[in-house]
Image: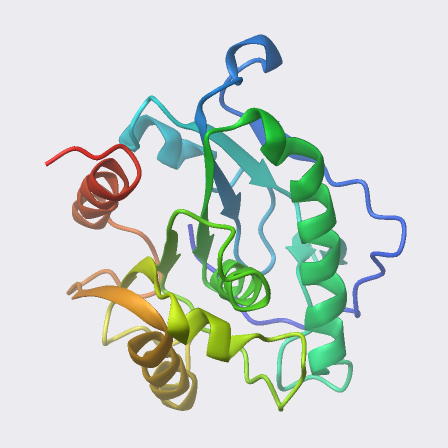
Length: 226
């Protein structure tokens, strides 16, 4: 589960009907807590489904495909270094994801988010736009986007009622730049109830040790287990 760094076109999400993989059949989802997975850059909805076996089985897991083709996979929005990047591209995608979430969340007891790499940018942006909507958020080897003062990001509301947030990363991650790590750390400390854990020899990926901590975090935060 890694990202690489090639170019991608800006997503077109005006009529987006996402491809979603579910861990449970529809008849078994009612009343369960929902965990939505957002994959990394140039991956797809299948990339993170292997995490399901490591997570609490009480959850219904939904893994969503990003809207824009990017080489052999998909992208949520252009990379910051690309000409097509703008905060409006992030807002467009996150708005579409939120609209899809509204069609499925009603049957679930709660909604939590998990994003890897660029998918963490989606998860944190959803939290920033709708701070009261999520039981918790998990961010793995990723980042939060610069808001550039856009009104879409309701950071004051997030800070007023900080959501539980798990952030795992390796200091030797060569994909997320130090500037983005610094921005992300500053935002999370100020706006969330943060659990931060550093891992060695993981680089830009997800480790089994980290997944054990994620399982504990979800169990305590959402299921009330100690």
